[in-house]
Length: 456
Image (tube, rainbow, N blue to C red; front, side, top):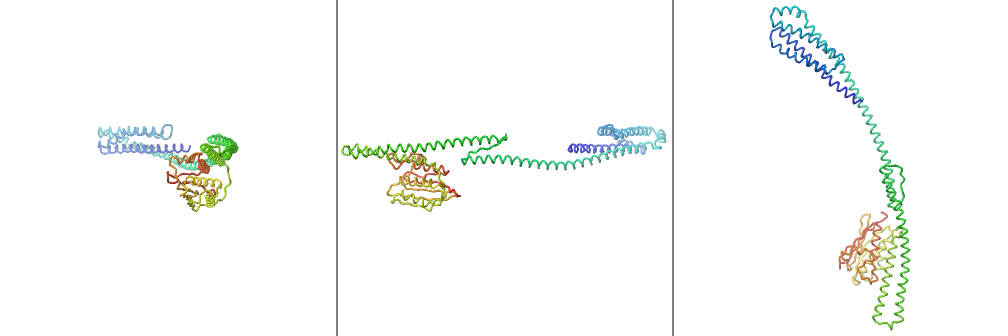
């Protein structure tokens, strides 16, 4: 509404300016006609009448233009019509005098005595000038009124605009803060749910709203419930598998020991009756049974990796020296750098080092063995290295060696079951760490793995 008022008053002032300008032009044109008329009467010079005849064409057009601007049924229209009438009266008066002036002195003198000396034209001109003055006063008065209204409207418009803008900002900021608070609260609850899911706590979020976030909440709750169900089933299956592994290992070891005993009895009781070829075959049987028993033990060790133990402070130097003393032959050259203290699960770190050192010993010629164990520190991760000068591993086997029951030795060799490196890889993966092997055939092997200090 204030904007419309400003617009209306601005339009009125623009129109008023045109009315005043046209009024001045009309009055000026009439005055020029009057001056030209007097000049001709005084000098009888026809050139004075140029402005007079020009005014005859211009003044009617200006009056008509003014009538269109001011409209009808108002005081200014009445004054303008009155000016037009009086101007027409003056035109009749001036036309008679000009005509008589052209006819001769006698005719002009008679009209001069009857009209000019009586100031008939002067009275008309004064009356026209007074009407123009009145017309302009009314217009200026209205112009002042609308100017005041325009200034007031602008003032109010600025004030109310500032108020409305302030209220809009306050309401907008308040609404935004409120919406952000509600949204952040709901998103935080969903983030908390996601964190719980990542930690193995399968809770749900209760949300009664129905909007874009509801779909996310439903998906998270559904995922949490499904994961809870799947993890529960997986734990049950793992427990069953562990029981199965122990039962199977016990049941398998019994006939293996029985086969070994039977072979021993045959060799003891019928050694004189056995041919050399038969003795050779009987010697193969204990090798195979021992390998079978080693495979069963390795499978049991692999199954036990799911067991969780509490973290503790570990002197890695002492741990590795203890493992090396029980595995590395005395004729080997063993180098162990200064290793860091860690806060982690002892049994898993112990299994990694034990299997890597044991693997190095298996693939090193006995007369020239050299094992080097070192560590590099990259905050907050330690990078351990177990390097040997053994037979090496061809690049195409670098991934295959970490698969269970995969070995580079012949299948009848008891000490190489192909389980050790698979155990190492499973432990490293469970710890979210990484392990790589650098090796070429005939140039030794270096196993590099990372281990995080849980206290950092």
